[in-house]
Length: 470
Image (tube, rainbow, N blue to C red; front, side, top):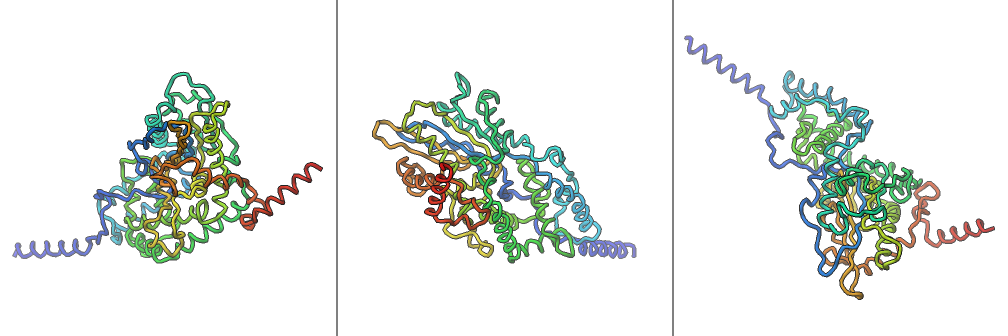
């Protein structure tokens, strides 16, 4: 009798456990190949070329290096921090959904990791947008890798004069200082130039009324349309269900969890963020595309004015290379290093036709663009950079060369031989652009200014000069 009662009791316990066993989607804590490409908050550690050497150019020697870089890994903005601090409430709800209501679909290990999560010191308001230790390391190691590949240009010590190197920055001073420490061992070896936030070289878009007026309207509209597509709506439904909600979470909540996931992964590249367990790999790809769309129209190929704004940096680079080519008496720096933001970098990439897709990114062609070139994870991660190297070759009649590296990976430019461009070809291709390089497209404060014919701009300039002279 006792045996039958014990057996019955065990059966009841088994059935109860069976009822309450969670239908687990997957276990992120066991993931051996996590998705690491998290748009503009991707850790540079995961996208740069690493120890791969820059290309050797037979019978040529690097004569000058020119670089524009963005800030390394840093803390969120005050607005982002305020949003992320609300995650403690969502954390409690998720735990309650699983442990009390038994509605959730996260595995035990992911749930335990989420239970242990606490808001980081990086989420203190006074640390907003401050470079993190990983960000310092990003810039130091970038400098050392460049130095190891171009030791005759980037000397760590010796008789360095102020004319040997040029440093300028807008809103990325700490990243620049860390880069200089990696290059010279001493941040004061070469004095940098801190330029105005509205500098027309490093932040041309900030002075452009047409850009400022249209960029948010257009990019917000396109992203909003993508958020109404099945891919994004399914993401909201699946994440809400996975976390145990009987209703759909707000878009803002989901994007805040995504931000926490990618910031934490960038801060500590060797650890998993418990907030990344919220998303499947496919969902992370959808969120990546959403941000790619945003910047495609904000700073990339989605609007013609973006290429025009990038021409000031291109003009600066070509002017420096032209002086080296001519062997002018004026002393040219061995290295020119600019530190700005991802919008200025993306404007320049657009001017140079780097990573341009044949098809435009749209709200409705996510699946068609799976192999797109415009991926902010690779072109605008933390510490993103574009490096141009000018080469002089043996013999007076030998053509000069130029090569480009994006995140230390060789850029395959159209019309160039495996990334190696003849300088004469490059000048012929881009001289027409830099010869028309001005901010006239920004006049008028509306997008109409973007499409003013060149002849009208010329006549307007001439008329202005006549008025000034009179």
